[in-house]
Amino acid sequence: MKLGRLNHIGVATPSIADSIAYYREVMGATDITEAFDLAEQGVKVCFVNTATDSGVNGTQIELIEPLGEGSTLRGFMEKNPLGGQHHVCYEVEDIVQARAWFEGKGKRILGPTRIGAHGTPIFFLHPKDMMGQLTEIMETPKSAGEGTH
Ligand code: CO
Image 1 (cartoon, helix red, strand yellow):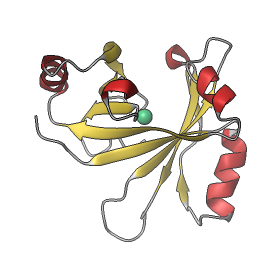
Image 2 (image 1 turned 30 degrees about the vertical axis):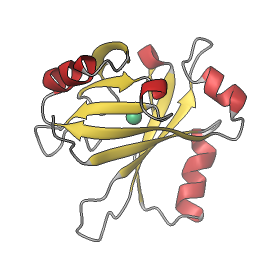
Image 3 (image 1 turned 90 degrees about the vertical axis):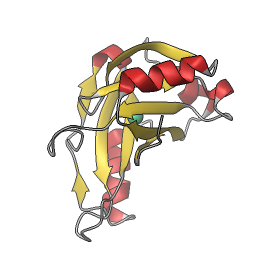
């Protein structure tokens, strides 16, 4: 398996609306997507695009807010009431091959491969097998529009 680009950093927040205002007013972000619900993962999501106007291939901050009582984010927010850095996401060319690679190395994978917030297949690696960092592996979007919304 070959490591692809850093697609995004997941940042948990108690309020996406407050975080959007922060990224606009304090961080100078100009390209932030509309928030939407990802019900099956129990999160509300939006993306802050960085380096939008510079011509370089910027990365994203994925803002995530707990949605519903069973949200997988609840435990994290109890430990981190202000929110904070939650996961990192790397692209790979082939998600099936990547999953087999990590499994072959004895790394624990959290749940099935599924369609993530970017509309592409993803899975999560257990932080205890990843030097403490919850890690999302995402198949590189095949078309230009995919993976950027
Ligand atoms: Co993510």
